[in-house]
Image 1 (cartoon, rainbow, N blue to C red):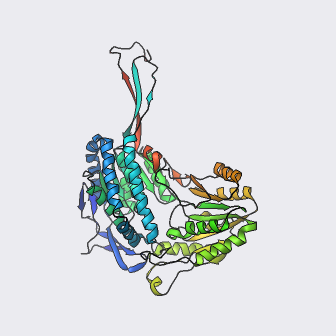
Image 2 (image 1 turned 90 degrees about the vertical axis):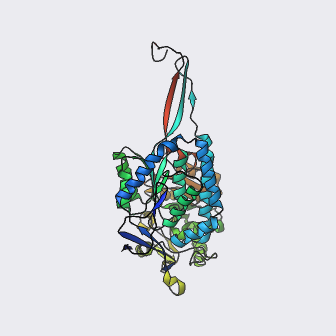
Image 3 (image 1 turned 180 degrees about the vertical axis):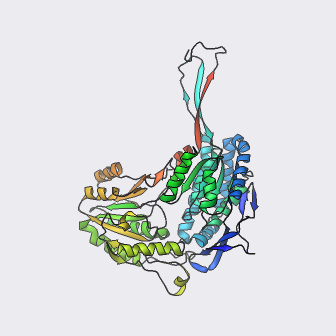
Length: 498
């Protein structure tokens, strides 16, 4: 909720290397979603003027950072990774307090952030171009990768460490300066990322952080003429608006947006493995990730057995405050998200059969948070809303099919195309699925949620637009390619190819 300015200290913006009190008159109060009597942070709803100041600071810092040798930029990111690696436990606890996910998931995210930093730091010595044979005599031709200038990063609340890191790190290593607009729900992780980079020696102005609402400071970041690129992660609706605005401003834009990820389970699959993986993919992180398992598309002959296994695992999921190391699933991020999930569960009851869960958990410590029992729907039509719309909660829909071709058709019957998986022991079916599934990431006999720091991340259709993130491909977005021709004849040529 937004509150009027009070004497309670609020998060400060990071502009030009300094933590600056915001001039905001409205603040967003963030409470621990597992224990709402705990105020985690107060976030300023900063002004456009403050975002303009951050962009100006980034623009002023760009020439010196551009001129810093790339290997030196890499050394700084290696120091950043080293500092962060020493703080994984404290970072994970910070993340869990403000976002709500189970501590084990937060530790994985913190370690993934370190992995990304280490990989990107190594790329500082591989910002390679190519040399080409020239059509002309005594002419040397090659390409070099050039930074863009000031880039903007708009990040979500569900991965408040990893996603800022995987946007900031390649932007910086390529020689750009950056302005980060993090989600209002998770300011503390963004603050700590900026602090760690500063501790590692990042020059003032190279990274700036401004807190506030998307329609105010986010819009200013997207529209400002000095910002040459925008990297966004969030909803498809907002991402499409940003992409259109970026096009009007002739900016580079990448958007990673929604997902409705299918798992196809064929009759020859190992059902205990498949059911355990689906449970983790659907209910881990409370289903609040774009790669979460949302649809199980399964051959009819094994569906009853699978659903029984999955329901048993869902019923045994340990739910509670994520700071308890034994907890497997925390709360929804806030009351609004919890209510959205509960609304979809009511919608789902009209089309499918609710096997288990789907209700708000109450009593004891549950009364202080936004907890929902993991929900499984069976006999779900492929065109139903719960099978087509992103819910962002611990809800999975089981769609029964007769054979592989019908399963593949059902898997592709969706506007989104991020991640997918198939469980089978038939190599022919594995490769047929890989060839024909319409997703940017696919897995065989593994969950939809897995990704690594050196592989590209992103989707197709309404999931993603622009260059991929992470890995070698992640660096391409943050650079422009320049072709260079060096004439060493020492004389004027009679023709362009002589």
